[in-house]
Amino acid sequence: MDFSIGFGIALAGGALAAGMGASGASIGVGLAGEMAAGVLSEDPDKFGQMLILQALPGTQAIYSLVVAILVMVKLQVFGGGGGLYDLPLAKGIAVFAACIPCMLGEFISAIWQGRASVGAAGMVARRPDAFGKAVILPAMVETFALLSLIATILLLMIAIQF
Image (cartoon, rainbow, N blue to C red):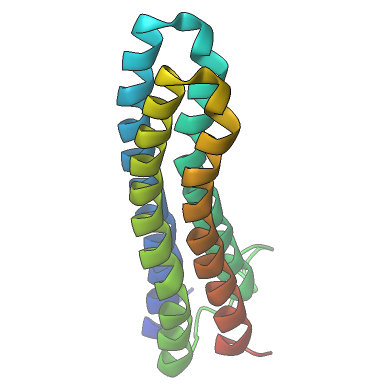
């Protein structure tokens, strides 16, 4: 079974999307986790609130994994040998380009969402009754992660039409 350059480039788009989304999510979750640990050292009863704030930046890893799976589905790599391994170069580049919003959007938004979660955790540490307001702040960053995901999905629909 020979793989074409187009297939490799398309697959690299999905792989980079997944890798960059997971990398950004790990940074964001790590930042929020540092702050959460500090808050919990003072008040262990805030564990549930801190867990939610720490988990928020992790959604970008899920979104980028969805993109990687969509790329593999588009390339028909599942199903035992019937894949598009001889994908033309232009279509491979189109798939790669379609993944760029996810690559950048998920990576960057996860880091900033982690930073917003740090601030929200500090707010909850001082005012536990403000959790509902505090969680909205990092949740706003999620909007841009979702926009990146939607852009990539729409572009993938155009990139390879069969």
